[in-house]
Image (cartoon, rainbow, N blue to C red):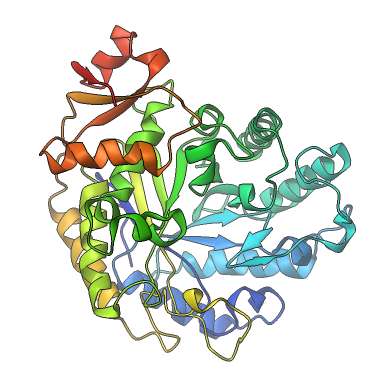
Length: 398
């Protein structure tokens, strides 16, 4: 059984069921799910993030599927077995997942964030989920949805922030003290898409970000082994910290990964180790969660080629080289968690909604000079208490 770490960062994987992908909610196979979770625990990981398919769980605004709820409860029970021992983050409104949109038929083009009737239905779904698993010992918390900015680009950030704050407050009422979050990709942090950086950094129990050199454009800009590719997670965790009003708010690298589509397969373990070590040089990182636990079975033919070989494990639960490397890193961190770097120098972000790779260039240039900077927004650059709480005593502009 995997032990919850007494100190230091958490390590996990976004669970990708090996046999039926997330179509498993309809084609449930207890045996394969259990074997998968045992294999994930065998890597030394302590949590998984799972994905609900919204139309499966809520086929009508007023109806939640009893069978889907039963399967969800069973998955958490399997995660709690003595030979598994994994905490489970439950991502609810999917929504957008691995290149597909799973909108319920009843949505009929209505907006999931600004339509009051849809929001009422979403709250009803959360109520039903919490009644089933809210008190479960392995329930880590709710994630509102996977990368919701991808399918809600027409929503103004102030509307997105208001919705997220309301939903996350409801989650906390249903299951107090759990890690309830909103699963952001890079877009809200880079360009305030659907949600603002300030909203993303202040609602929920932690600030969430997804870091992919391929999808952010960092791979094309910096190359497979460039500073910006190896330090992308570090940049994003410092960018996320810049927007938080609380100096030590937890930050969660909730998705990161690499595919043989983007780089030679034998280079992925080294890149993984580099990205993890650099990310965890930042303070207040709650954890790192790889995408995904397993490869996708190629009998499913509709996925983008990028998606198939992202696993730490094969569809037969064999450990891949990246899985072996991550297992070694987890063991090292469990034995002796390293101290984060003190970042006395901070790069000032003048335009909070323009924090993409052009701004990141300045961060990576400092890294190349041997400086590991923090980032502060312009409005906090004059807040002496905030700077002191973060250990910053020198500011640099772009």
